[in-house]
Length: 394
Image 1 (spheres, rainbow, N blue to C red):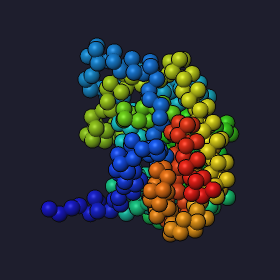
Image 2: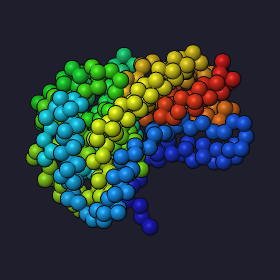
Image 3: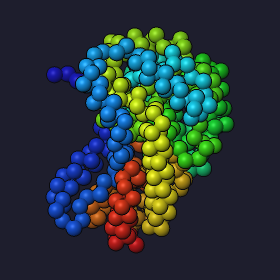
Image 4: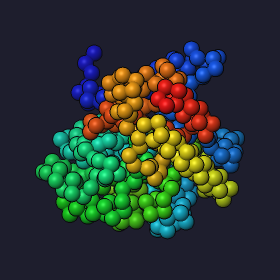
């Protein structure tokens, strides 16, 4: 059987390779004094709050399980629009919001809508690997541009301008970003978008961690710039609905029918039950719970990052959002006599039963020096992880 060139262009998702190894070891040590601590996967330890769970149960009981419109329940699109108004002071009409089967479906739809074979899309290095694979699946090429800690590991307008040429079609940014948890400075994002727009390109911003921003200045939606920004968002992270597979797109008016046509053919619609449940995300009690959880994520960050720094796992830029620590493990590699973060992750797992993600997935710009820890786990688990790492690195 011949495998398509498209499929062969997609690299393995090494995060999951590490996860499989961690799961295997977890079974072996489950009943020991040092069970596995998982700091490798970016999934909140919180689940959907009570009102969301109750809304899902009610949808099933009431038989609200049939297809919705490809663009999503009108009521949910309106609730999302209202959230932008109350949380960010933005007037985003519901007609520009398309509900999708997770942010992954949103990225697939917008890439298929905008990218032709041979088109190039500029992205930061490091960045989330699946985003560049969506570009590749649309037969485009992701051009990874190395970034530095001084740039918050984000693209600058100068670098976008220097890399732009005849085949460049646009930029795909993430703010806050996975793996670094850093956001783009608002004025720099505006400069990038103005340059891209002048050349007829598109600006896509992955904002799935936007709700988990900890600094008001940086925690603003790119949609504030103008109506041509394309925003990808999700119910997975801030709204704690990872396995429900529900997200959304905000697109310019003229792109809505294009995305709708693609969604009709590729997905029919997002999960109806998940959509009805998500309506309850915007109830006052749910939003209050989400804000309590956001404060907890910030408290975990404020504990864990300094503790990593004290261990010589230096985090060069304090994350202002999401729940990640992008740590330079060069000194620790020397201490454990291993070469690079890939070997370090497995050695750390073996010695401490703490799972973390090596930088290999996230690009090529010095990523072998870095390891990503997820602070989406409980404070108790983070404290346990630090204590165990101190035993081999302290």
